[in-house]
Image (cartoon, rainbow, N blue to C red; front, side, top):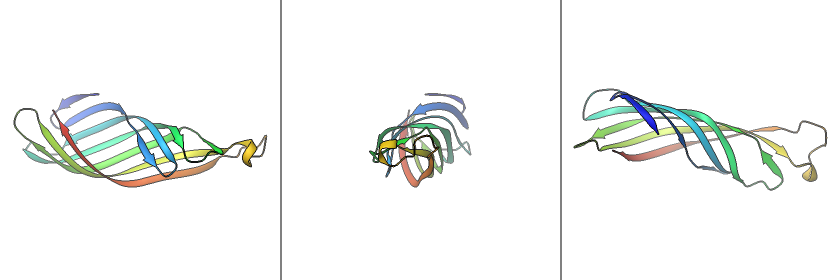
Length: 130
């Protein structure tokens, strides 16, 4: 959901599902997006940032703490008749998490056993807006 300031800029917030090798995460984020020109075909940008929560992890012997989530993309938007618009973007997603082993599987009781883990990847996004 969001608010379109004008044709060149929109502010919003969202919820999604992101899958990495470590499992599935539920990001809650704020985003800023916009067109760079006032034309039918225009360069387009998108930036998001927030936190993601582990929904499913591939490590049964560890807990994943709250994750920092960022996404940035550039591409093109095509405005067609009415309010319909098509967007094609390439981007980069990055998540930084902390993994804490369960004490039963090797964690040392009473010690801070946090290990930083980074998930990152290139994305291709194709969307239709109205």
